Length: 350
Image 1 (cartoon, rainbow, N blue to C red):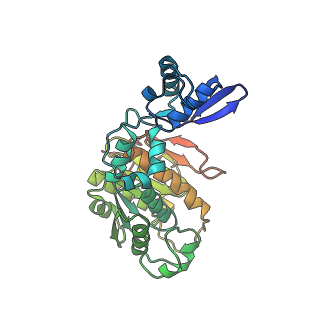
Image 2 (cartoon, rainbow, N blue to C red):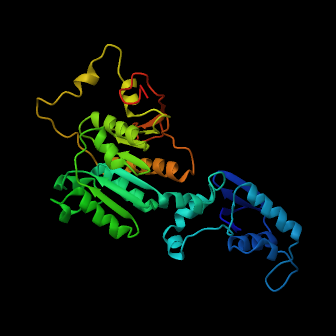
Image 3 (spheres, rainbow, N blue to C red):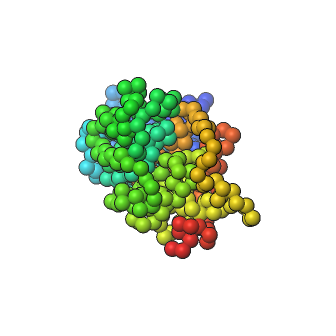
């Protein structure tokens, strides 16, 4: 085992801090030596013994008691965990594994959780401002296979907010520019590109077949694209997560939870026709509402975290039967409950 907590000196005591939990113990030469050895991964059995050289005398009872106290606050990481990771894998994902080690339990070991993600595949629909950040986040998180679906080419105006493109990308297909950048960043990532326009749920179902998760990050056609992603998810049986427009979610598990259609149905005011009017073909020129890089960067982080929670099983996703709504300080943690809606045009009759 190895100690992974922060240790602070508090007067005559040592304060061991671990994610909101604390252990206070008297400061002494023996305690300092013991904690240092545990930090180095020395087997506790080898720590106890008489004074020799720079080692103070420490009884087996003191070691056992201290180790038990450290275990009680989750400050010890097990080193004897079976895994199939190569030294290069561990080096590349060291910080991820250290984070996951604090969540070991019902979801298995840190290696189990990370391996699930490495075996997983995600289809990302939309690789623009938001989608490019999501793709980068998934690659950094160690996803094994990533599908990119987008018919558009990179425009100079994309560069104020897209993480995967540069001036040399302008005029090239977004999916190809993204694939090339991601392949350099994460050579083990398998990237598939679909340079086509989604025109209905049947397209989503066809492309999404065989993936573990579909993420919708496209914004056109307005409103309908979200229902198409949910409808395609229902047809092929692959869960989907919606993002964009100031909301993250819901994470739709076909046959079990609420979907994007439920969200749209829940927002319709009695007697209002705005949901119908909003989907009329535009008859007047429109302009983009604009964007700044911090917005897609912030939103994408929550999207990738939700995907990682679902795929790794490290924690229940917050967007199952709910969604996160943008507040005055970007995504400030506001979660809105969303149950399946009987008037949903996507899953209301499932």
